[in-house]
Image 1: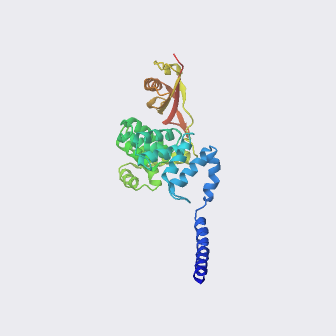
Image 2: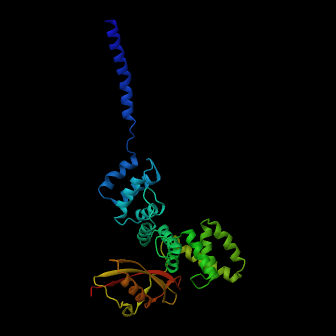
Length: 317
């Protein structure tokens, strides 16, 4: 009888010991972090901004464990709603193979979408992919265009590359003064290679050329800090010349990025996107844009070269 009572006491003691442990174990399940709780309801309701913020939390491991699958899920939902930064992160995911198989073609597609919506980092990455032929067909002209756009949006490495292009006359008319101006913008952002090359180039220029480079730099800084191109918008002249000769079978529109020179002539143009995709009409649209003339953009009363997007539309034939 004593042995039985002793067993009961031991069992009760063991149960008493286990109960707090079980309760403690249940409490260790981490609650949703406040940041997740604040975004989750809106994200589940389809808010692209909240979906993007959740993607960032899981991608960077901020306040929650890093989770590439969850990051991909939320970034994709936001990107499919045309959230530009989410599209950029989708490009990074496929470019680096974060939680997915690396796919440079899909990375380029997502970078292009983000670049068209003005994300500077996407513009620079797309320029690099065109230069190297990674995920896209190698195209120096397209690389040059996107490098210039990224430089205009303040990407230091793009400014450095553009400075070298002008200094050496690679794909553009050689202009060492303009080259130094762009190198100067990269130097201002602390990009070391630009400092080395800029100092070397400055030693070979006259005082007049150095003053022009400083003046150009100040002008660019004024428009950059203002958050706009500060150059007005080029206006097309003689639109009749821009009618594409080719007519697609269904209504199609093409976005063309054009470099408008100081004389109003189109120096270069590339089709960025067509909906629905129609390569033949893209080529026709580019030829049409190259025939256009524009009133030149101006900055501080002087004509300047700018990039300008042109939408070419064609009705069904």
